Image 1: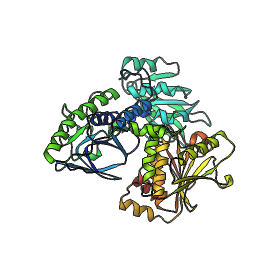
Image 2: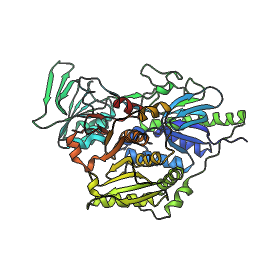
Image 3: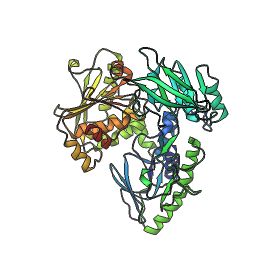
Image 4: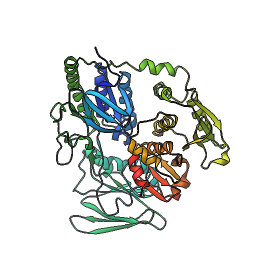
Length: 540
């Protein structure tokens, strides 16, 4: 039986509930499966603060539910790769999935890329995105503490997130285009009956405006034609959160699969698409209900159909991917070493990354007398204890601003251009580790065109990435900025946890993360970006 290191039974594109469920079922059935995710494992559910309608789970957060799913799949031997899928070749019996970290070969592909928030298109929406217009209550709600907030939408997300926003906002006004909410009665009633929420049906936003932040909102009743205007009090601002549905992430398969008029993938009852060997599950599919429970069901169904496909292809081709190996024992072994900060699962992943690092790095700490500095020191010392390729040293606090700070330095003491201000936990843990891997080499794969474009930048560029550790969109921009800094010594990438540095929030009027500040304010941009998008921004 021929075995190939990069040969899988199934490649799952997308690490949300649908993809994670499929990976669990396939690995449990002893098929080799890899989940490829470009942002973060868990998908859109991770931005949901509270999940109360998942059967068997009385109450949890979206992030916790997704992490449980991922760990279940990993325990059965599913593999995970942070990378961007850049192309598919579905010809032949063995398919090719091209990623930013190299190509994978497989018998079947499951598309589980989900969908991303849809813009409404009112005047000023794009201009004030990140300066008052937001799309994620979990990521950005805290920025509107004590302020008025308007929510655009009438579905599940609008109703649920409006209630969540009352934790921070002075008052929430929901603007619904239709006559009423379009979600379940219980969900709608929770918003409608909340003392801090006002619901305005048959209402659309016409315009938002301001200076460095939102100051003005105009909306209109579609039945009466009456126009209302909201002006923020002197010196104040407000927020507009848009929950107007999603756009499917189908760019990869536009020329391969059949799509409906909205761009969603059409499948048969077994989740098979019109393309041979390609299945789809979750929010990327055309369907009447988009909930985590339906995504899970579709992922399980697709997995069982892919099992039949892979079994037949193994018999036909004589190719047999390596059987998955449970990682439960691997994860438990390092946990016994006594780590107080990292779980056995985290340590197992760390050891895999550190083993691939080509050179040693120094984690140089700039500290003050605060508890946060003590936390950062403990964090870095325990991290360095996991590999002989990492060491910790103390730098002069006078040489750095916004303490505490850790700079990633080469073995000769020179700065590699990467720094984190605060403690890189939450969603920034993975991006920090990827930064180490890229700085030490060989690093993540990078196409030649992007590498040449990065190295062609001759002027000094300082990239400040302002993040929240709870934000699921921030790591993409952080990783991209760090990639540029690693490839070009004229570029630096410094990440700041805004929770600890309110002066930066005020200076740049940040009301949404991630926020990118170029050269101290020459450019200020909001939203996640990959390497190519960041290069395009810098070329402007």
